[in-house]
Image (tube, rainbow, N blue to C red):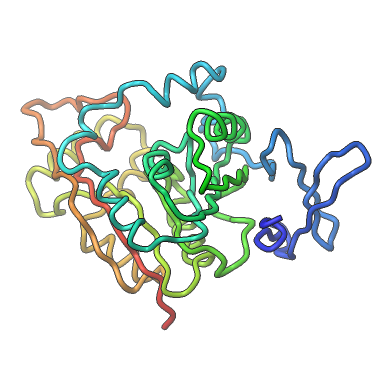
Amino acid sequence: MHLNKLLICPKCKKQMKLKIQKNDTLIYECENNHQYYVVDGVVDFRTREISGEQWSLSYRNYEEYMHEQYGPCNPNYNRGLNQSEVIWEKISELRPRVILDIACGTGQGIKHQIKRINWPVIIIMVDLSHRILKWNKIFYSTEWKNPYVEMIYLACDGANLPILSESVDLVFSYSGYESMQAKMLDGFREANRVLKNEKHTIYNKSVIESFESENSKKWMNLLLASVNEEEKEWWKSEFNDMEHWLNICISSGFLENKSIQIYGELPAPDCETFPFENEMAQWMAEYIFISKKLRT
């Protein structure tokens, strides 16, 4: 019933209420009769990926999904500080009651926090893919259950959240903003909208050392030479050093920003070929940001 207070229609922005049909089908409906079904425990807003993306088809079955949950990760992401410990220190300090995990995927970031939470929390997992969220619901209600935590699953567009403004205590992102690609800044601004005043978004972000750094220049040039023209334009917008990113934070309504460096850039290779086929930002520096919403 928490969703009766939180959900708004993504089309008309009117509040949505739960209806139960005669066959026990659950539907959320607004006063303009826009309807969204609850399917396999997930509120399905029928969203689709941006052009060229096939995230919803990433795992063919639940067994492949489970391999993602327990399989090894890229060692380049394990250098430097322990991200989970840095994130937990801040979450445990803030003790939020409503957390929104934006573009959550399989929950690779939030799952390291869930089992440590020892106060009542609602976690809203938001992702484009109903299929991934359906498997999340199975996983987090069986393999990874915490009695203090109530999980809610919304298959929706993170750049157009069906959530009431100023209703969330913390927006969490573990590579979620970046995974939204062309919609990243829209998602970042939506996070600001749904946050209560003086509340925070906690997220990891890849940045370059500096636009003046020879190491950064070498990496950027190698990457840009390895992609097509459309991807090249996107990557140019994705390259941010700390100064550029903090300016984006401020313009998005996050007027107070703190950061913790997890690791720096990898040394650029002594060759003229970009060395990575996937996870192409793995050479970049990684930071945890704590950005606070403040009304001006």
